[in-house]
Image 1 (cartoon, one colour):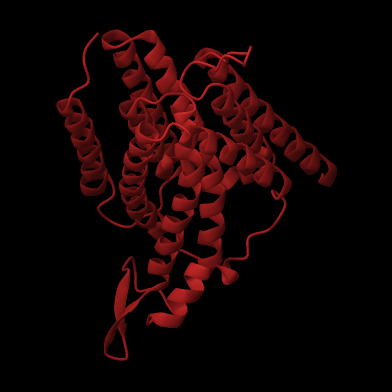
Image 2 (spheres, rainbow, N blue to C red):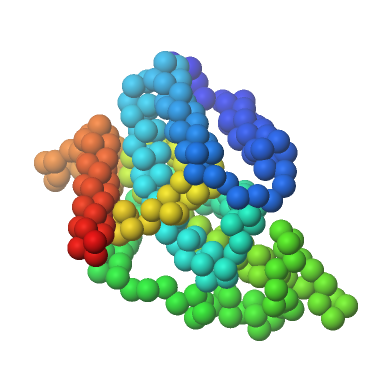
Length: 318
């Protein structure tokens, strides 16, 4: 088994930075609308990249770690779908032109990568120092799942968002967009554009989602490298995923309920199996492969029910 060294970490991070630079410097140098076909190709490419990474883990490390990565990636990707729904609401609230949305998402992803890395490092340090943190995280995930399930019908009130209200109170903000710029001139001084406020809320939203998603992967593995890589490869494909799914949100109306069940399930798994081996008083062990099938099954069921509901609604209107 190949030992994971600092060079593997540096190599992975360098590859991610190269992919982002290639994306920004070659394919999206100018603000433009991302067509559905291009978004589908990019989304497929990121999934293939994750599959190749899982294959490399299987070859150089172990089958178990490859399954752990795949499970963590699926959890992160599924929670990213909920993030897509939130981003769509933010773009609609600010009436962000289609050609500027990719720029916001790109910088949003860069900020998310930094935040996720910091949160994972802090989580690993806490878990290694205090074993009981795993029980806290497990209970938190169960609570987060229950809260998401019972509050999933509440509509977002972005005008009441505390970050947005604080920014509008303390910072100079222009009323209109200034092309794809985040800053402009207002009464002779530097001011934020509505695009900057949009980015601010996108970053805040990802931070909120990361509070759920990062602990969720710790239910699968305590390996910091797998937690980090599964998070990053899921988040980096968020932009193309948004443009792929933004026009089909009706087909995900029951997704939030499915994600709530996923969070509760992995929270229970963490409580029963906090250190990779269940305590003596627990007679039930949930293998990683079972977790992978359970998460995938819940997601497929919720998306299928959403698609059926959307089809029936449109058939009734017709």
